[in-house]
Length: 418
Ligand code: ZN
Ligand code: ZN
Image (cartoon, rainbow, N blue to C red; front, side, top):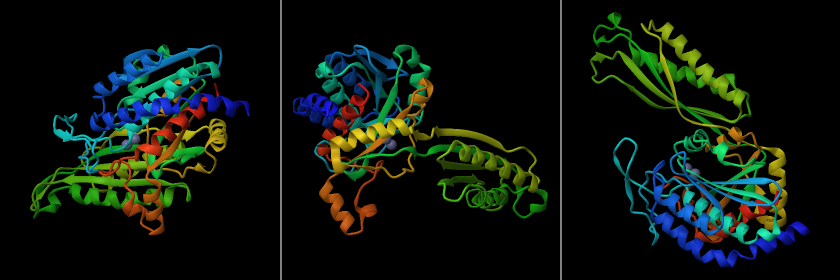
């Protein structure tokens, strides 16, 4: 019971942080920033961390911020939040809805919205950092509060690592992260093993020989070649991967030609692959290359196909011991509100950080939907229609109990080590 007493002592400060935390959340929600442009958010984060007594490193991997609070001998726990928003036009109708616009990486002006809830992650971690700092007489060790840029484009974690993250930090023992999800607010969910898929996008150019649409014998038609590839790729998941292990291969884009009576000289295909084990991931990516190369040969393609991988996200594979420890702590604190998280088809780059530091990790989810709204949708059998999901223009967590739950989850999990 000693641990529970310590948790209660640290969380006794919740009512003191809730006020500024809710205000900060609304402010972040109204001022979202695209990936790698999180300057305002990073400034707010750094100022708050300094105010809580953390040593602060700014500009790590661009706009990343790291706060370190050393409090005697003991384990070092890294808590991570992501900060970026999405090019989505907000349609929540909230009083604090975003009307922000920004220049995307390609220069286009786009609307910006915190449609994935990263503003909630930032507010929760800043609150947890303050609570742990104020309650430092109740724990020993080191807390690292890491605020990562550019999760949505999959390279923010990597940018921080490449910018000497490992040198800035003391030796880390465990890394923890969380995401708000379209589940009832107040609920937390943990899962051991693979929890989020690895994602890989691949751009493929296949070459033909262009010519007149009336003289196919003088050409190599890349449209027919691309069509054969699309059909043949459907056999990868159905015939080459283990039944029962989820995997997805989608051809999301195919471009060739400009006119009905001209045979094009090349076609472009863009694929997305989702997997839950490194072995399956490697096998599928190899199968794609093999099939595309063979179909090009079968079609008399005059030039080798070209492959380019992009938008790659690592597998999120929760360590079983770490997850167990967090799940036990959550069960003791949240009771029935602690559940098992179903496997998610989304992807994340968080695990790049513990992988680079060589430490185990776990990543959990917490609900952000008004519990009454969720229950009504469930009763009506309309969850997928009525409950907005991350990245949709109507996704915005209810502030409470989402904020309290995400804050408590970070504190409770961190104290399982400290
Ligand atoms: Zn997202
Ligand atoms: Zn997200």
